Length: 121
Picture 1: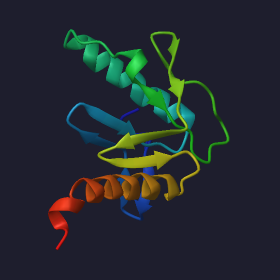
Picture 2: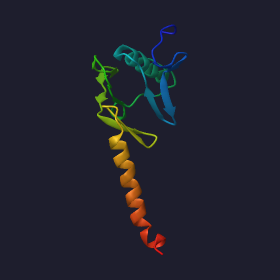
Picture 3: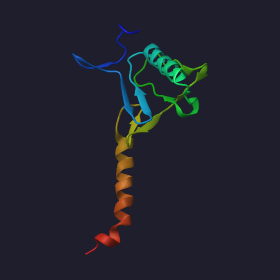
Picture 4: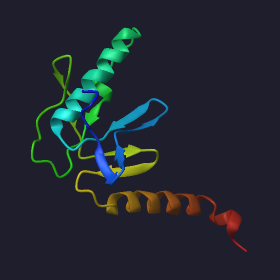
């Protein structure tokens, strides 16, 4: 798989393979097969370090996919998510941002109400 390109082309010379932050990772691929290969590689590397992948904390999201085949870890199927939060942003299966905007507006509204007495003149 070393010579095989498995990410998404962002520009002619740039391919995005994954997004990593602390203990979160989001694998990005244009095919279901590539996501499974990346997942297998993660499991192999984790096993070498005496770690294991918690299947109950892993989710898969198919966006604009023709092949919605299951992604597995050690024979267990990963949950297919409709949306998830990554670094504070809500990513949705349909690819639009309305849910993220609504969530951020709700957070701002709650914060404003909490500080309303402080901000009143």
